[in-house]
Image 1: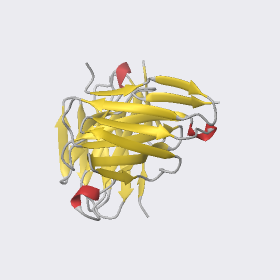
Image 2: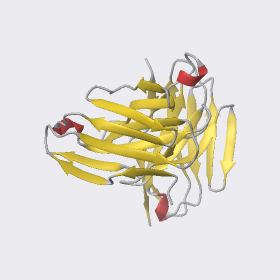
Image 3: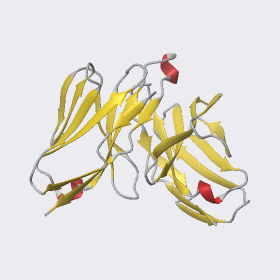
Image 4: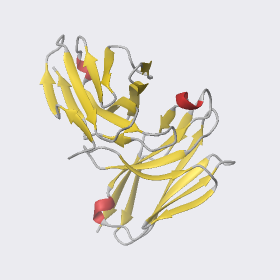
Length: 114
Length: 112
């Protein structure tokens, strides 16, 4: 079956670094997305990985290993406003290109403490 | 102005009522999606559309219907609302297949 696993909750301290892991088992693979969602608000796009390696965007980086079915989101210099849920989503690889589904994880709720 | 606009933002209604949630976008994207989000269940896809003539069921389409009136508009209807359809509903759009989805601000729907 198709599955995405993320830790349910994490806590970290302001100014620190936190790594949020995501493991997936899907029918093929065509890219992995990370989104941030503040409570009661819309998810917003953070990063996209389709090839192995690290993608860096300011304080946020995302890593992918396709052979291990594994990704992580790294948040540096944590700020209070980073308290949010972080969603991992994988585009599966089956079917015609247009019909490849996006499989969503349940999200990791990150609390940043002073 | 928001690129993806959902109306209404909040709605409280009674069991058995017909409800329509509307979504419009100015991003020029062909692909549009409706999701619901429930605590502990994450985002679940209800319906999606890749162009005006294309409508597809998602994983939880029972009890819902959609209409793609134009490239920019995609509405979701609950023909006869029931309490377990109480949820936060999101509309999203995307460009090419590997482009990220852009979400509206959501509609918080409560069915009594």
